[in-house]
Amino acid sequence: MNAFLDHLLYNPKEPLTFVSIFFWIYFSVVLVGFVMLRKRLAIRNAYLFLISLYFYYKTSYWFVFLLLFSTGVDYSIGRALGTIHQQGWRKALVALSVTINLSVLFYFKYVYFFSDILKASFGIDWTPVAHYALWSNQSFGTDFVTDRIFLPVGISFYTFQCISYTVDVFRRRIEPVKSPLDFGFYISFFPQLVAGPIVRASDFIPQLYKPYQVTRTEFGLGLFWILNGLLKKVFLADYIALNFIDRVFAQPTLYTGIETALALIGYSLQVYADFSGYTDVAIGVALWMGFSLTKNFHSPYKATSVADFWKRWHMSLSGWLRDYVYIPLGGNRSGTVASYVLVYLGLLGVALAADSWETPAIISGVVAGVYAVYKIWPKFREWLNTNVNLMLTMLLGGIWHGASWNFVLWGGLNGLGLVFYKGWQAIRPYKSRGFWIKAVGVLLTFTFITFTRIWFRSPDLETAQVILDRMQNNMSWALLLPVMIGFWKPLSVMVLGYGIHMIPESGKQAYRLLFARTHWALQGVVAVLSVLVMYQVMTAESQPFIYFQF
Image (cartoon, rainbow, N blue to C red; front, side, top):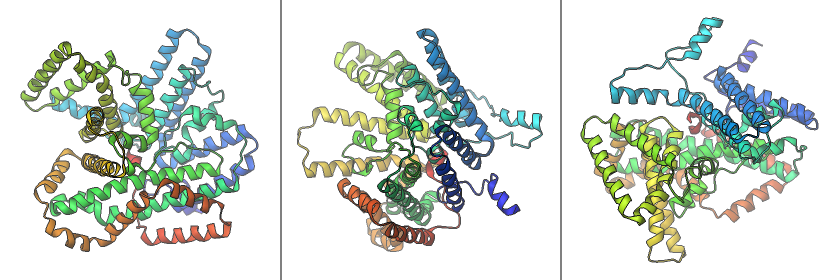
Protein backbone atom coordinates (compact mmCIF):
# COMPACT_ATOMS: atom_id res chain seq x y z
CA MET A 1 0.00 0.00 0.00
CA ASN A 2 2.80 2.41 0.88
CA ALA A 3 4.54 1.62 -2.41
CA PHE A 4 1.33 2.46 -4.29
CA LEU A 5 0.97 5.76 -2.42
CA ASP A 6 4.60 6.58 -3.19
CA HIS A 7 3.76 6.29 -6.89
CA LEU A 8 0.99 8.85 -6.44
CA LEU A 9 3.36 11.42 -4.94
CA TYR A 10 5.92 13.49 -6.82
CA ASN A 11 9.17 11.67 -7.51
CA PRO A 12 11.82 13.44 -9.64
CA LYS A 13 13.11 10.04 -10.74
CA GLU A 14 9.68 8.95 -11.97
CA PRO A 15 8.14 11.84 -13.93
CA LEU A 16 4.71 11.27 -15.41
CA THR A 17 5.61 11.04 -19.10
CA PHE A 18 4.11 9.30 -22.11
CA VAL A 19 6.75 6.55 -21.99
CA SER A 20 6.03 5.54 -18.38
CA ILE A 21 3.67 2.72 -17.49
CA PHE A 22 2.20 4.81 -14.67
CA PHE A 23 1.02 7.42 -17.19
CA TRP A 24 -1.08 4.87 -19.07
CA ILE A 25 -2.54 3.53 -15.82
CA TYR A 26 -3.28 7.13 -14.84
CA PHE A 27 -4.80 7.88 -18.25
CA SER A 28 -6.97 4.75 -18.10
CA VAL A 29 -8.43 5.91 -14.78
CA VAL A 30 -8.86 9.44 -16.16
CA LEU A 31 -10.65 8.09 -19.22
CA VAL A 32 -13.12 6.11 -17.11
CA GLY A 33 -14.01 9.21 -15.10
CA PHE A 34 -14.19 11.28 -18.28
CA VAL A 35 -16.64 8.85 -19.92
CA MET A 36 -18.86 8.92 -16.81
CA LEU A 37 -18.93 12.74 -16.82
CA ARG A 38 -18.91 13.33 -20.58
CA LYS A 39 -22.50 14.63 -20.79
CA ARG A 40 -22.13 17.13 -17.93
CA LEU A 41 -19.81 19.59 -19.61
CA ALA A 42 -19.13 21.95 -16.71
CA ILE A 43 -18.28 19.10 -14.32
CA ARG A 44 -16.31 17.33 -17.04
CA ASN A 45 -14.17 20.40 -17.68
CA ALA A 46 -13.60 20.94 -13.97
CA TYR A 47 -12.62 17.27 -13.63
CA LEU A 48 -10.11 17.54 -16.49
CA PHE A 49 -8.69 20.72 -14.97
CA LEU A 50 -8.05 18.97 -11.67
CA ILE A 51 -6.46 15.88 -13.19
CA SER A 52 -4.31 18.17 -15.40
CA LEU A 53 -3.09 19.93 -12.27
CA TYR A 54 -2.22 16.54 -10.79
CA PHE A 55 -0.33 15.67 -13.98
CA TYR A 56 1.69 18.87 -13.66
CA TYR A 57 2.28 18.21 -9.95
CA LYS A 58 3.74 14.80 -10.86
CA THR A 59 5.93 16.50 -13.46
CA SER A 60 7.01 19.70 -11.67
CA TYR A 61 6.06 19.30 -8.00
CA TRP A 62 5.03 22.55 -6.28
CA PHE A 63 5.50 24.58 -9.45
CA VAL A 64 1.86 23.68 -9.97
CA PHE A 65 1.15 26.81 -7.90
CA LEU A 66 3.05 28.87 -10.45
CA LEU A 67 0.78 27.46 -13.13
CA LEU A 68 -2.23 28.41 -11.01
CA PHE A 69 -0.84 31.92 -10.55
CA SER A 70 -0.46 32.47 -14.30
CA THR A 71 -3.91 31.01 -14.87
CA GLY A 72 -5.50 33.30 -12.27
CA VAL A 73 -3.78 36.42 -13.59
CA ASP A 74 -4.86 35.95 -17.18
CA TYR A 75 -8.36 34.78 -16.33
CA SER A 76 -8.90 37.93 -14.25
CA ILE A 77 -7.42 40.24 -16.88
CA GLY A 78 -9.46 38.53 -19.59
CA ARG A 79 -12.67 39.07 -17.62
CA ALA A 80 -11.76 42.72 -17.07
CA LEU A 81 -11.11 43.18 -20.80
CA GLY A 82 -14.60 41.88 -21.46
CA THR A 83 -16.23 44.59 -19.35
CA ILE A 84 -13.97 47.61 -20.01
CA HIS A 85 -14.43 49.47 -23.30
CA GLN A 86 -12.08 52.44 -22.89
CA GLN A 87 -9.16 51.65 -25.16
CA GLY A 88 -6.53 53.19 -22.89
CA TRP A 89 -7.47 50.96 -19.99
CA ARG A 90 -7.68 47.93 -22.28
CA LYS A 91 -4.14 48.57 -23.51
CA ALA A 92 -2.95 48.95 -19.93
CA LEU A 93 -4.51 45.61 -18.99
CA VAL A 94 -2.99 43.70 -21.87
CA ALA A 95 0.37 45.33 -21.13
CA LEU A 96 -0.01 44.19 -17.51
CA SER A 97 -0.67 40.62 -18.65
CA VAL A 98 2.34 40.57 -20.97
CA THR A 99 4.56 42.14 -18.30
CA ILE A 100 3.57 39.68 -15.58
CA ASN A 101 3.86 36.64 -17.84
CA LEU A 102 7.21 37.63 -19.29
CA SER A 103 8.53 38.63 -15.86
CA VAL A 104 7.72 35.18 -14.49
CA LEU A 105 9.29 33.56 -17.55
CA PHE A 106 12.38 35.78 -17.24
CA TYR A 107 12.83 35.03 -13.54
CA PHE A 108 12.70 31.27 -13.93
CA LYS A 109 14.31 30.85 -17.34
CA TYR A 110 16.63 33.77 -18.05
CA VAL A 111 17.81 35.15 -14.71
CA TYR A 112 21.08 33.17 -14.73
CA PHE A 113 21.76 34.22 -18.31
CA PHE A 114 21.21 37.84 -17.27
CA SER A 115 23.46 37.32 -14.25
CA ASP A 116 26.25 36.03 -16.51
CA ILE A 117 25.88 39.08 -18.77
CA LEU A 118 26.13 41.41 -15.78
CA LYS A 119 29.28 39.69 -14.62
CA ALA A 120 30.89 39.67 -18.06
CA SER A 121 29.89 43.25 -18.90
CA PHE A 122 30.23 45.15 -15.62
CA GLY A 123 32.02 42.79 -13.29
CA ILE A 124 28.91 42.57 -11.09
CA ASP A 125 28.99 39.21 -9.33
CA TRP A 126 25.28 38.80 -8.58
CA THR A 127 23.91 35.40 -7.62
CA PRO A 128 20.14 35.01 -8.10
CA VAL A 129 18.22 33.69 -5.12
CA ALA A 130 15.10 31.54 -5.11
CA HIS A 131 12.95 33.99 -3.13
CA TYR A 132 9.86 31.79 -3.41
CA ALA A 133 11.77 28.96 -1.70
CA LEU A 134 13.03 31.28 1.05
CA TRP A 135 9.50 32.54 1.70
CA SER A 136 8.09 29.01 1.81
CA ASN A 137 10.82 27.78 4.15
CA GLN A 138 10.28 30.71 6.50
CA SER A 139 6.49 30.59 6.39
CA PHE A 140 5.73 26.87 6.30
CA GLY A 141 8.91 25.20 7.50
CA THR A 142 9.64 23.55 4.14
CA ASP A 143 13.16 22.64 3.11
CA PHE A 144 13.26 23.82 -0.51
CA VAL A 145 16.63 24.58 -2.11
CA THR A 146 17.25 28.35 -1.94
CA ASP A 147 20.53 28.72 -3.83
CA ARG A 148 19.20 27.45 -7.15
CA ILE A 149 16.25 28.56 -9.29
CA PHE A 150 14.88 25.53 -11.09
CA LEU A 151 13.18 25.78 -14.48
CA PRO A 152 9.53 24.65 -14.33
CA VAL A 153 8.71 22.14 -17.06
CA GLY A 154 6.67 23.61 -19.90
CA ILE A 155 6.72 27.20 -18.63
CA SER A 156 7.46 28.61 -22.10
CA PHE A 157 4.49 26.78 -23.58
CA TYR A 158 1.80 27.75 -21.10
CA THR A 159 3.17 31.31 -20.78
CA PHE A 160 2.72 31.82 -24.52
CA GLN A 161 -0.81 30.36 -24.32
CA CYS A 162 -1.68 32.82 -21.55
CA ILE A 163 -0.34 35.78 -23.54
CA SER A 164 -2.12 34.77 -26.75
CA TYR A 165 -5.42 34.45 -24.88
CA THR A 166 -5.19 37.94 -23.37
CA VAL A 167 -4.10 39.51 -26.66
CA ASP A 168 -6.90 37.79 -28.59
CA VAL A 169 -9.48 38.98 -26.04
CA PHE A 170 -8.02 42.49 -26.38
CA ARG A 171 -8.29 42.26 -30.17
CA ARG A 172 -11.91 41.03 -29.71
CA ARG A 173 -11.20 37.84 -31.61
CA ILE A 174 -12.66 35.77 -28.78
CA GLU A 175 -14.94 36.39 -25.84
CA PRO A 176 -13.51 36.04 -22.31
CA VAL A 177 -14.02 32.63 -20.72
CA LYS A 178 -16.66 32.92 -18.00
CA SER A 179 -15.67 30.01 -15.79
CA PRO A 180 -12.23 30.01 -14.13
CA LEU A 181 -12.31 26.21 -14.21
CA ASP A 182 -12.87 26.18 -17.97
CA PHE A 183 -10.03 28.64 -18.48
CA GLY A 184 -7.78 26.63 -16.18
CA PHE A 185 -8.54 23.52 -18.20
CA TYR A 186 -7.58 25.33 -21.43
CA ILE A 187 -4.23 26.43 -20.00
CA SER A 188 -3.36 23.16 -18.28
CA PHE A 189 -4.81 20.45 -20.57
CA PHE A 190 -2.39 17.69 -19.67
CA PRO A 191 -1.58 16.05 -23.06
CA GLN A 192 0.03 19.23 -24.41
CA LEU A 193 0.86 21.09 -21.21
CA VAL A 194 4.59 20.48 -20.87
CA ALA A 195 5.80 20.29 -24.50
CA GLY A 196 3.11 21.70 -26.73
CA PRO A 197 1.77 22.20 -29.23
CA ILE A 198 0.95 25.79 -28.25
CA VAL A 199 -2.84 25.90 -28.49
CA ARG A 200 -4.69 29.09 -29.41
CA ALA A 201 -7.70 29.95 -27.28
CA SER A 202 -9.77 30.59 -30.42
CA ASP A 203 -9.09 27.01 -31.57
CA PHE A 204 -9.54 25.18 -28.27
CA ILE A 205 -12.01 27.02 -26.05
CA PRO A 206 -15.04 26.46 -28.36
CA GLN A 207 -14.37 22.72 -28.00
CA LEU A 208 -14.98 22.96 -24.24
CA TYR A 209 -18.69 23.43 -24.85
CA LYS A 210 -19.24 20.77 -27.49
CA PRO A 211 -20.71 17.41 -26.49
CA TYR A 212 -18.37 14.45 -26.47
CA GLN A 213 -18.41 12.61 -29.77
CA VAL A 214 -15.71 10.30 -31.08
CA THR A 215 -16.37 8.15 -34.13
CA ARG A 216 -14.93 4.68 -34.66
CA THR A 217 -12.48 6.13 -37.21
CA GLU A 218 -11.42 8.95 -34.87
CA PHE A 219 -10.73 6.45 -32.12
CA GLY A 220 -8.59 4.44 -34.54
CA LEU A 221 -6.74 7.58 -35.60
CA GLY A 222 -6.11 8.38 -31.95
CA LEU A 223 -4.58 4.94 -31.44
CA PHE A 224 -2.48 5.38 -34.57
CA TRP A 225 -1.09 8.73 -33.39
CA ILE A 226 -0.30 7.32 -29.93
CA LEU A 227 1.58 4.30 -31.31
CA ASN A 228 3.25 6.40 -33.99
CA GLY A 229 4.48 8.94 -31.44
CA LEU A 230 5.76 6.35 -28.98
CA LEU A 231 7.63 4.45 -31.69
CA LYS A 232 9.19 7.71 -32.89
CA LYS A 233 10.34 8.50 -29.39
CA VAL A 234 11.58 5.08 -28.23
CA PHE A 235 12.64 3.34 -31.45
CA LEU A 236 14.00 6.30 -33.41
CA ALA A 237 14.96 9.17 -31.11
CA ASP A 238 16.14 7.36 -27.97
CA TYR A 239 17.85 4.48 -29.74
CA ILE A 240 20.07 6.55 -32.03
CA ALA A 241 20.74 9.04 -29.22
CA LEU A 242 21.94 6.48 -26.70
CA ASN A 243 23.88 4.35 -29.17
CA PHE A 244 25.52 7.05 -31.24
CA ILE A 245 24.65 10.76 -30.96
CA ASP A 246 25.10 11.30 -27.22
CA ARG A 247 28.48 9.56 -27.27
CA VAL A 248 29.82 11.89 -29.95
CA PHE A 249 28.56 15.11 -28.38
CA ALA A 250 29.71 14.05 -24.90
CA GLN A 251 33.36 13.72 -26.05
CA PRO A 252 33.65 15.12 -29.59
CA THR A 253 37.47 15.16 -29.51
CA LEU A 254 37.44 11.34 -29.48
CA TYR A 255 35.61 11.11 -32.79
CA THR A 256 36.51 11.87 -36.38
CA GLY A 257 34.87 14.51 -38.53
CA ILE A 258 32.94 11.78 -40.38
CA GLU A 259 31.47 10.44 -37.12
CA THR A 260 30.67 13.97 -35.99
CA ALA A 261 28.90 14.80 -39.26
CA LEU A 262 26.87 11.58 -39.13
CA ALA A 263 25.97 12.27 -35.49
CA LEU A 264 24.76 15.72 -36.49
CA ILE A 265 22.59 14.23 -39.24
CA GLY A 266 21.32 11.77 -36.68
CA TYR A 267 20.51 14.57 -34.27
CA SER A 268 18.28 16.22 -36.86
CA LEU A 269 16.29 13.00 -36.93
CA GLN A 270 16.40 12.61 -33.16
CA VAL A 271 15.06 16.06 -32.33
CA TYR A 272 12.30 15.68 -34.93
CA ALA A 273 11.30 12.18 -33.82
CA ASP A 274 11.43 13.17 -30.16
CA PHE A 275 9.42 16.38 -30.41
CA SER A 276 6.95 15.30 -33.09
CA GLY A 277 6.59 11.99 -31.25
CA TYR A 278 5.44 13.85 -28.14
CA THR A 279 2.92 15.91 -30.10
CA ASP A 280 1.67 12.80 -31.93
CA VAL A 281 0.86 11.14 -28.60
CA ALA A 282 -0.70 14.37 -27.30
CA ILE A 283 -2.90 14.60 -30.40
CA GLY A 284 -3.96 10.96 -30.05
CA VAL A 285 -4.75 11.18 -26.32
CA ALA A 286 -6.71 14.40 -26.86
CA LEU A 287 -8.60 12.86 -29.79
CA TRP A 288 -9.77 9.98 -27.59
CA MET A 289 -11.32 12.59 -25.32
CA GLY A 290 -12.96 14.42 -28.20
CA PHE A 291 -10.53 17.34 -28.47
CA SER A 292 -8.58 18.42 -31.53
CA LEU A 293 -5.07 19.83 -31.05
CA THR A 294 -3.10 22.00 -33.44
CA LYS A 295 -0.94 20.22 -36.02
CA ASN A 296 2.67 20.91 -35.14
CA PHE A 297 4.75 19.28 -37.91
CA HIS A 298 4.33 18.73 -41.63
CA SER A 299 7.27 16.61 -42.86
CA PRO A 300 9.78 19.44 -42.27
CA TYR A 301 12.72 17.71 -43.96
CA LYS A 302 10.84 17.80 -47.25
CA ALA A 303 11.13 21.60 -47.16
CA THR A 304 12.60 23.14 -50.31
CA SER A 305 13.77 26.33 -48.55
CA VAL A 306 14.41 27.73 -45.09
CA ALA A 307 11.12 29.65 -45.33
CA ASP A 308 9.30 26.43 -46.22
CA PHE A 309 11.01 24.62 -43.32
CA TRP A 310 9.71 27.12 -40.77
CA LYS A 311 6.19 26.66 -42.15
CA ARG A 312 6.52 22.94 -41.44
CA TRP A 313 8.54 22.81 -38.18
CA HIS A 314 7.01 23.52 -34.73
CA MET A 315 4.12 25.16 -36.56
CA SER A 316 2.35 26.29 -33.40
CA LEU A 317 5.40 28.30 -32.28
CA SER A 318 6.10 29.64 -35.78
CA GLY A 319 2.50 30.81 -36.06
CA TRP A 320 2.61 32.34 -32.59
CA LEU A 321 5.78 34.28 -33.37
CA ARG A 322 4.27 35.46 -36.66
CA ASP A 323 1.00 36.69 -35.16
CA TYR A 324 2.23 38.06 -31.82
CA VAL A 325 5.77 39.25 -32.63
CA TYR A 326 6.51 39.56 -36.35
CA ILE A 327 3.29 41.27 -37.48
CA PRO A 328 3.07 43.67 -34.47
CA LEU A 329 6.68 44.72 -35.18
CA GLY A 330 5.63 45.69 -38.71
CA GLY A 331 5.87 42.37 -40.56
CA ASN A 332 7.45 42.63 -44.00
CA ARG A 333 6.17 46.17 -44.52
CA SER A 334 8.49 48.26 -42.39
CA GLY A 335 10.53 48.45 -39.24
CA THR A 336 8.94 50.11 -36.23
CA VAL A 337 10.32 52.07 -33.31
CA ALA A 338 10.05 48.88 -31.24
CA SER A 339 12.07 47.02 -33.89
CA TYR A 340 15.00 49.39 -33.77
CA VAL A 341 14.88 49.72 -29.98
CA LEU A 342 15.25 45.94 -29.76
CA VAL A 343 18.12 46.03 -32.26
CA TYR A 344 19.84 48.76 -30.24
CA LEU A 345 19.43 46.87 -26.96
CA GLY A 346 20.72 43.67 -28.54
CA LEU A 347 23.82 45.33 -29.98
CA LEU A 348 24.40 47.14 -26.69
CA GLY A 349 24.28 43.83 -24.84
CA VAL A 350 26.81 42.26 -27.21
CA ALA A 351 29.11 45.28 -26.91
CA LEU A 352 28.95 45.26 -23.11
CA ALA A 353 29.60 41.53 -22.94
CA ALA A 354 32.70 41.79 -25.15
CA ASP A 355 36.08 40.94 -23.68
CA SER A 356 37.92 43.78 -25.42
CA TRP A 357 37.34 47.26 -26.80
CA GLU A 358 37.59 46.06 -30.42
CA THR A 359 34.10 44.52 -30.48
CA PRO A 360 32.25 47.68 -29.32
CA ALA A 361 34.37 49.72 -31.75
CA ILE A 362 33.51 47.44 -34.66
CA ILE A 363 29.81 47.46 -33.73
CA SER A 364 29.82 51.26 -33.54
CA GLY A 365 31.51 51.50 -36.92
CA VAL A 366 29.07 49.09 -38.54
CA VAL A 367 26.07 50.89 -37.06
CA ALA A 368 27.37 54.25 -38.27
CA GLY A 369 27.97 52.85 -41.76
CA VAL A 370 24.56 51.20 -41.94
CA TYR A 371 22.87 54.41 -40.79
CA ALA A 372 24.67 56.43 -43.47
CA VAL A 373 23.66 54.02 -46.22
CA TYR A 374 20.14 53.89 -44.78
CA LYS A 375 19.79 57.65 -45.14
CA ILE A 376 21.12 57.99 -48.70
CA TRP A 377 19.99 54.77 -50.42
CA PRO A 378 16.18 54.23 -50.53
CA LYS A 379 16.39 50.63 -51.76
CA PHE A 380 18.67 49.66 -48.90
CA ARG A 381 16.32 51.42 -46.48
CA GLU A 382 13.41 49.37 -47.84
CA TRP A 383 15.42 46.14 -47.66
CA LEU A 384 16.52 46.81 -44.07
CA ASN A 385 13.04 47.74 -42.89
CA THR A 386 11.50 44.59 -44.34
CA ASN A 387 14.16 42.23 -42.95
CA VAL A 388 14.89 43.65 -39.50
CA ASN A 389 11.64 42.24 -38.13
CA LEU A 390 12.41 38.83 -39.61
CA MET A 391 15.78 38.72 -37.87
CA LEU A 392 14.32 39.93 -34.58
CA THR A 393 11.59 37.29 -34.68
CA MET A 394 14.07 34.49 -35.30
CA LEU A 395 16.39 35.77 -32.57
CA LEU A 396 13.48 35.83 -30.13
CA GLY A 397 12.52 32.36 -31.30
CA GLY A 398 16.06 31.23 -30.56
CA ILE A 399 16.11 32.71 -27.07
CA TRP A 400 12.66 31.15 -26.41
CA HIS A 401 14.34 27.75 -26.71
CA GLY A 402 16.96 28.44 -24.09
CA ALA A 403 18.88 31.03 -22.11
CA SER A 404 22.29 30.84 -23.75
CA TRP A 405 24.28 32.43 -26.54
CA ASN A 406 24.08 29.10 -28.37
CA PHE A 407 20.35 29.57 -28.90
CA VAL A 408 20.77 33.24 -29.80
CA LEU A 409 23.31 32.24 -32.45
CA TRP A 410 21.09 29.39 -33.67
CA GLY A 411 18.13 31.75 -34.05
CA GLY A 412 20.31 34.36 -35.75
CA LEU A 413 21.64 31.83 -38.29
CA ASN A 414 18.11 30.77 -39.17
CA GLY A 415 17.15 34.44 -39.52
CA LEU A 416 20.08 35.00 -41.89
CA GLY A 417 18.98 31.93 -43.84
CA LEU A 418 15.51 33.43 -44.28
CA VAL A 419 16.94 36.81 -45.32
CA PHE A 420 19.27 35.15 -47.85
CA TYR A 421 16.40 33.08 -49.27
CA LYS A 422 14.23 36.17 -49.73
CA GLY A 423 17.06 37.90 -51.57
CA TRP A 424 17.72 34.85 -53.73
CA GLN A 425 14.03 34.62 -54.63
CA ALA A 426 14.22 38.12 -56.07
CA ILE A 427 17.27 37.51 -58.29
CA ARG A 428 17.29 33.79 -59.15
CA PRO A 429 17.69 33.21 -62.89
CA TYR A 430 15.03 30.47 -63.14
CA LYS A 431 11.37 30.43 -62.22
CA SER A 432 10.41 26.79 -62.78
CA ARG A 433 10.04 24.39 -59.88
CA GLY A 434 10.85 21.06 -61.54
CA PHE A 435 11.82 17.87 -59.72
CA TRP A 436 15.59 18.47 -59.73
CA ILE A 437 15.22 22.06 -58.59
CA LYS A 438 13.08 20.88 -55.67
CA ALA A 439 15.48 18.03 -54.89
CA VAL A 440 18.43 20.42 -54.72
CA GLY A 441 16.35 22.77 -52.57
CA VAL A 442 15.52 19.95 -50.15
CA LEU A 443 19.17 18.90 -49.90
CA LEU A 444 20.48 22.43 -49.37
CA THR A 445 17.76 23.25 -46.82
CA PHE A 446 18.38 20.05 -44.84
CA THR A 447 22.14 20.67 -44.88
CA PHE A 448 21.73 24.23 -43.63
CA ILE A 449 19.21 23.34 -40.91
CA THR A 450 21.40 20.45 -39.74
CA PHE A 451 24.46 22.71 -39.70
CA THR A 452 22.69 25.23 -37.41
CA ARG A 453 21.88 22.41 -35.01
CA ILE A 454 25.52 22.36 -33.98
CA TRP A 455 24.63 25.25 -31.64
CA PHE A 456 21.20 23.85 -30.75
CA ARG A 457 22.63 20.54 -29.52
CA SER A 458 25.95 21.68 -28.02
CA PRO A 459 25.81 22.60 -24.31
CA ASP A 460 28.05 25.64 -24.82
CA LEU A 461 29.93 27.63 -27.45
CA GLU A 462 33.19 25.79 -26.72
CA THR A 463 31.66 22.40 -27.57
CA ALA A 464 30.13 23.86 -30.72
CA GLN A 465 33.56 25.11 -31.76
CA VAL A 466 35.06 21.66 -31.19
CA ILE A 467 32.35 20.10 -33.36
CA LEU A 468 33.09 22.62 -36.10
CA ASP A 469 36.83 21.96 -35.87
CA ARG A 470 36.37 18.19 -36.11
CA MET A 471 34.21 18.54 -39.21
CA GLN A 472 36.56 21.08 -40.76
CA ASN A 473 39.96 19.58 -40.03
CA ASN A 474 39.40 15.88 -39.45
CA MET A 475 37.17 14.72 -42.33
CA SER A 476 38.97 11.57 -43.42
CA TRP A 477 36.63 10.03 -46.00
CA ALA A 478 38.65 6.83 -45.97
CA LEU A 479 37.12 6.14 -42.56
CA LEU A 480 33.54 6.34 -43.83
CA LEU A 481 33.14 2.61 -44.44
CA PRO A 482 34.69 1.51 -41.10
CA VAL A 483 32.47 4.04 -39.28
CA MET A 484 29.37 2.75 -41.07
CA ILE A 485 30.29 -0.82 -40.15
CA GLY A 486 31.02 0.11 -36.53
CA PHE A 487 27.74 1.98 -36.06
CA TRP A 488 25.61 0.00 -38.52
CA LYS A 489 22.68 -0.47 -36.12
CA PRO A 490 21.98 3.20 -35.25
CA LEU A 491 22.79 4.23 -38.85
CA SER A 492 20.27 1.67 -40.14
CA VAL A 493 17.64 3.12 -37.83
CA MET A 494 18.50 6.59 -39.13
CA VAL A 495 18.02 5.43 -42.75
CA LEU A 496 14.69 3.86 -41.79
CA GLY A 497 13.56 7.03 -40.02
CA TYR A 498 14.43 9.34 -42.89
CA GLY A 499 12.90 6.88 -45.36
CA ILE A 500 9.56 6.92 -43.52
CA HIS A 501 9.75 10.70 -43.28
CA MET A 502 10.07 11.01 -47.07
CA ILE A 503 6.95 8.95 -47.84
CA PRO A 504 4.53 11.19 -49.80
CA GLU A 505 1.82 12.75 -47.65
CA SER A 506 -0.89 11.02 -49.66
CA GLY A 507 0.66 7.67 -48.79
CA LYS A 508 0.81 8.54 -45.09
CA GLN A 509 -2.82 9.63 -45.05
CA ALA A 510 -3.78 6.40 -46.79
CA TYR A 511 -2.17 4.09 -44.23
CA ARG A 512 -3.42 6.18 -41.31
CA LEU A 513 -7.01 5.81 -42.51
CA LEU A 514 -6.46 2.14 -43.35
CA PHE A 515 -5.31 1.51 -39.77
CA ALA A 516 -8.09 3.67 -38.29
CA ARG A 517 -10.82 1.77 -40.18
CA THR A 518 -9.47 -1.75 -39.79
CA HIS A 519 -10.99 -4.26 -37.37
CA TRP A 520 -10.38 -3.61 -33.68
CA ALA A 521 -8.75 -7.03 -33.25
CA LEU A 522 -6.11 -6.25 -35.87
CA GLN A 523 -5.53 -2.84 -34.26
CA GLY A 524 -4.98 -4.65 -30.97
CA VAL A 525 -2.41 -6.99 -32.55
CA VAL A 526 -0.54 -4.02 -34.04
CA ALA A 527 -0.61 -2.25 -30.66
CA VAL A 528 0.79 -5.31 -28.86
CA LEU A 529 3.54 -5.78 -31.45
CA SER A 530 4.43 -2.08 -31.19
CA VAL A 531 4.70 -2.33 -27.41
CA LEU A 532 6.94 -5.40 -27.76
CA VAL A 533 9.24 -3.52 -30.15
CA MET A 534 9.45 -0.59 -27.75
CA TYR A 535 10.10 -2.91 -24.83
CA GLN A 536 13.01 -4.52 -26.68
CA VAL A 537 14.78 -1.22 -27.41
CA MET A 538 13.81 0.79 -24.33
CA THR A 539 16.59 1.39 -21.82
CA ALA A 540 16.28 1.18 -18.05
CA GLU A 541 16.13 4.98 -17.83
CA SER A 542 14.19 6.50 -20.69
CA GLN A 543 15.51 9.73 -22.22
CA PRO A 544 13.47 12.80 -21.19
CA PHE A 545 11.68 14.55 -24.02
CA ILE A 546 14.03 17.18 -25.47
CA TYR A 547 11.47 19.99 -25.39
CA PHE A 548 10.77 19.51 -21.67
CA GLN A 549 13.75 21.82 -21.08
CA PHE A 550 12.04 24.66 -22.96
